[in-house]
Image 1 (spheres, helix red, strand yellow):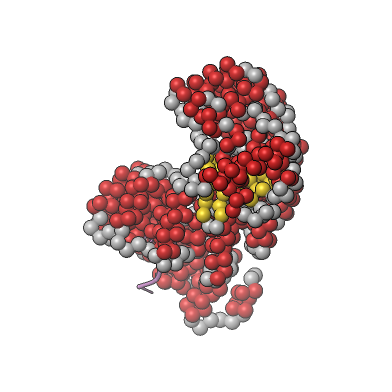
Image 2 (spheres, chains in turn purple, green):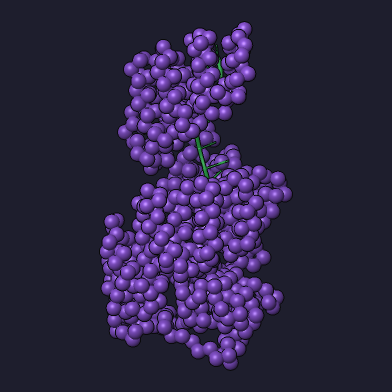
Length: 623
DNA sequence: GCCTGTGCAT
């Protein structure tokens, strides 16, 4: 018997209620609650509605903690449970692992003709919100709400609005929104969130701008909406506006903004937020720590990511995964694997994303055997089936290592249909290992699969050109034009003094453009003296008529580096973020610059980091 | 008679 109860069983209580109710609050697990339950049966207290409700509520406190079965059993044995008790059960089931059970229980409640009260629908609708698809159920409940007259209650209507907005029924949501007589700030916020999550970001902004009284949730919903729609700059802009208006961000708002920083590589801004958190003594909860780790890692500051990670006592999957992914994109495979082992030892169960991180780490670090072994363990030790992403990682891992046959075999044996990412990994391997035959085949598959993706045409044309099949390369390029696919411009940014400067190839829009080109020519002269000869591997693509000025010596990363040279002191680290992969010529040039000028250059491309020091790159020339 | 609705992570 639990020590908690021992002291209470040795004497006969005078008032069972005075004894049991405070005890319920002291119980720390189901076993103790069961003992109090036993006591309540013995004393007859279980027949009182209030103590019985309290017991149910205690058992339901954490619906995922495993006491729900017992709670349901207790509930079933209560004769004529009141509305409060039904509500308690519905609420717990709604946020449990099987929300549909809440709906079933509600049906029983109807069958037993138990009256609703104003809490019933908000609890019940939470179940719909937590179900991936409960459109019909939601509509039926909507009818009940109207019939029972609860449509006039703002909490109930807002719950309904939230479900429609969250599950993609944005039209129903907006109709409902327009019809609510008692709309309040929650209605507006749910609507903004619904529009944003449904990809209608302009509609969200329109509502947001119309709102007279915004609260922190309105601002956060809008910022998060921008992040989810990959409009990171807009997210940061809105955050700045928030500050101008003296609106204090809370933990959730900051987490959202930090995510935006991570995506664009805005280290200064991210660091500023970290300082702000410390200054304002905002509690660093696990989510905030997790996004800080992610932000620092994605902004190239792996040591700072590690510092936040190490000072976190209670870690969870997300936290560990963020760190593992951080190690991965920095090419530090060994440390990623060690952390994974640590996770297993401490009983933190990895998930899909964790495995993607670990496999990526193995791939980028060339750890083929380790990667294979982890991949096998997904099924064997974790009873999970590898996802398309995991297969993509494996194809990348094998392909990078030059095992093209094995990579192709992997795709052939996949139980799930390979997607563009999987084929893309193989195509990249063909580029790295100069396998033109396979490259040509895979390139065509990819173009069929994703005819709107410019990168695929560019990559295939690049491979063909590198082998000297110029005519074929031009055909591919023309095909892209015929299909009206615009080439996604390569864009590099450098963040200096809290301001992000962006460059595209051949860019002349920067106010200091004259100086930038002058500086670049100086650098180029110096590099040529050191024996640099431009690599023409990717040149073809950029020498077509209208793109003449985008010849490789004007690639965006070079302009960004030149600008970095103008604006930083000699020897200072330069950080560049690029939206595409680095081209091989830029990679050679940057290595040389790092040596000739003794500069550390940290370049984040769309997949990973390249840290250039003294003529070497952390990617070991394989990316 | 105790319990309602909206925003954040890998």
